[in-house]
Image 1 (cartoon, one colour):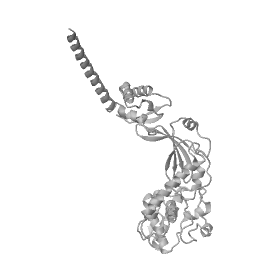
Image 2 (image 1 turned 90 degrees about the vertical axis):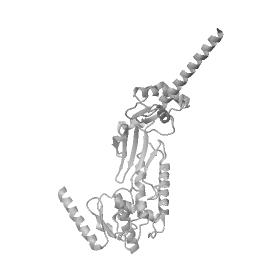
Image 3 (image 1 turned 180 degrees about the vertical axis):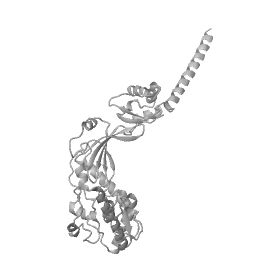
Image 4 (image 1 turned 45 degrees about the vertical axis):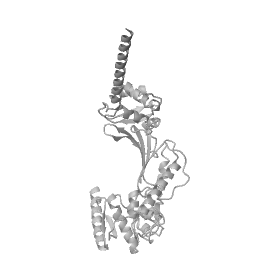
Length: 386
């Protein structure tokens, strides 16, 4: 009898073990399988939250079917106590394994609110935007100039959220003075700036920053990036260029940057100035004259006067030979590369063509024809605007 009972007990234990093993295998399969989420969502995890609360919210938003399995999987992989605060983009069909890795990993928030402070040639703008999970594109919520007046209440509310992200976007062609002045309006940064960095040495780029980042440290990072860009481009430069140092190449890059906003033209514009230097011609470029007037402190806001074109300054390339003494702005990477690898052309002249670009010419006669066409376009535009 006891043998019979023992045999039945062993049989029952085997059945139970098989059932448990089957449940574990099923649970593991559910944990790793694509989830039910039909459209991406942005999940906000509050500071101090826990995995139970988060898993139940995920279940309520149809991102997971079995929140208990998500918690067990996190426990099994020792991730339950690594939940991070932030806003996270949960892609459609994400498995529970993917979601746990996202919420407990080392990365930063992947969606939610982002504050982008844009520093441009003609001004600055604080832009608050939200990621639309459905399109994976940012939508602008509000925008304002922080140096022109009080910020909207919405901005102050978002500043209080711990997972709001911040970015400084510096446009190509801004001067170092403009960058330093604009950074005073970034209230999420800290510290003063001792001196305006030398012209040309700040890399136009988009920089993600943490609240409390020192302005001086950010400027240092910009200088390091520009130095690295210039060094690499110099190492890969074309042969026979009419400048001897990376610093001279940076001056040329800044002139190219200010002369055209059309990406496809940069190497052509660079070729014109390189050809002029080779021929011993003066560069005769208005942006250098303007810099000599403003010292890079703001925008001139009007056309150049004849007296200014004839006034001798270190930056008046109608009066001086060769390059001006310093860059006239902070050029982007494309302009640096154009200055060091210009197109091979015979162009010596260019003028606006009315389309936003320029008409290039090899001879003065061709250039004069292009200038006449441009004057006619200007006159027509002036007539139509009156």
